[in-house]
Image 1 (cartoon, one colour):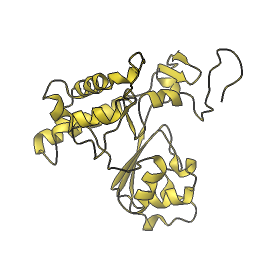
Image 2: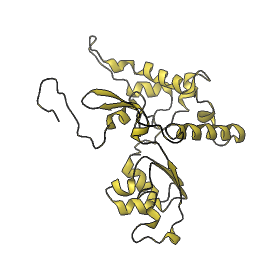
Image 3: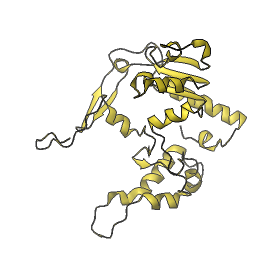
Image 4: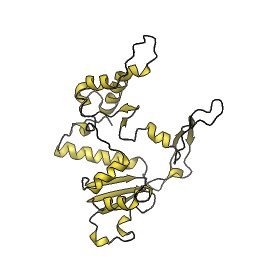
Length: 242
């Protein structure tokens, strides 16, 4: 809330340093980079998408900065796919949500418990402890065929299969641990809701390429597989501009 001093602004109480930074990177299901809306089923084409999310005003002198929404969406699409095709075609390559779909953290584990997920990457988190219903989360993890735990150390999520009351012989999930760099081993910016942007230097180097290298390597290999073996709807993968 507002801390009650001039210039203080409104400050959210967040549970982690740099949660605002993760939000700015649009790691939530309902937004794309630049705080653009994730397209839904009703947004059949780029023109409809822009029309649905561009604010309209009857005041000619209104700032209405988000009236520039189409410029931002066009820029995002080109940043993703370059000029490999026209904007209208490239728009169809963006990820879409079903109308009314909620793909938030809690809902994902509901769907996982129903057996609708084959695999799961846990990137620097510990849902077996941080979920409101830890037992439900662990039961959901047991419905997977495989899980990759990307973390500095093993944790309750990576070892859910040997937790209290769990018979490892009855768990089908194959678990992989990918060690990753911790905060002291990488440099980068921290952004918080107090409008502070701070730079943090690395204290030591990680023992191996274990930062963004992980997801980059995965992306390159997946793209190679799509290029060689085609597969279902390969265009969004093989036409990425990075």
